[in-house]
Length: 353
Picture 1 (cartoon, helix red, strand yellow):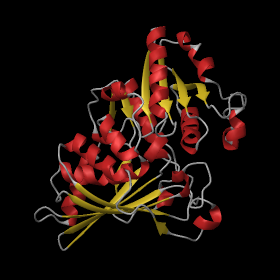
Picture 2: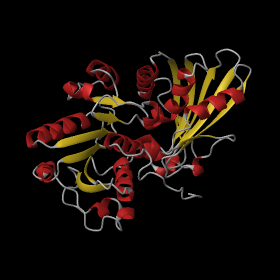
Picture 3: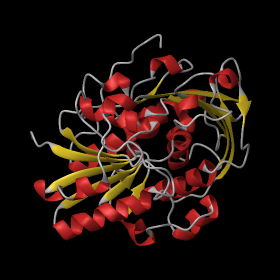
Picture 4: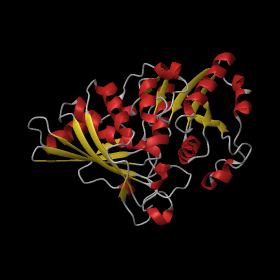
């Protein structure tokens, strides 16, 4: 029960990596062994993430070579990838090959998009590039942890942040037969969702006091959500998704619209969704519209339901860096290690952030 597992973190200098480092430091059964960053090798973690200096005062970024030379030191490793889309699969394949040669066990959780789709052809269709490890696709399952009770693969993938906010509403609505299989979604994300490298759309003077849509009805999370809904429910859906950039740093507020199937009312749907998530430590059905400030910095999600004239609207809030990325990944680590989903993830919100 007191087992502690060493963690290798790939792509260690971005915002998601920073959240993974924070959550690993809080976790009672995980110990950070190596943080791989090609751009910051041998630099202190505290130089990249000043807020983590107290928990990683001397730890440094390392190279792939430095890490792989030490794989034989432990019989079981956890590898979490926060590497960019398109690069993650190749890195993961390299580490799995080295683990196989060293004859150690390696459990992988990918927070990138590289293993979210069922085939290399689907990945090519969406991302416009060849998949770098198609032979590994069958070893990964992608879903929000609450939606996949039994995992039949050795490794797991966390869906994207926007996708997570939509799936939390859509999967139970479809699985319980409460709505017709067509959804309209408007979702607003914080600037950290665009990554650490500054751009015109994430630069503070452009983002502050501003709100704008982008990639309307063409975002890559659209086919991702459809693929994952099919994998979790066996049903095909139509999805119409408009993402928006909000004037805040972290969090997603998604509003999911659908038509009720039959004579469903608000109380019935709210009760059914509460029952669906009754064993979840993190997903709550609330009576009032949920607020970002109630969940920012945590792995929690809050959903509210409104029904009128045959239409249902589900509002969902999550932290894009935690439940939508790093927290969901740690939740998968817990599941794959045989630990409770909540291990190391019960975090009190800061409040007034």
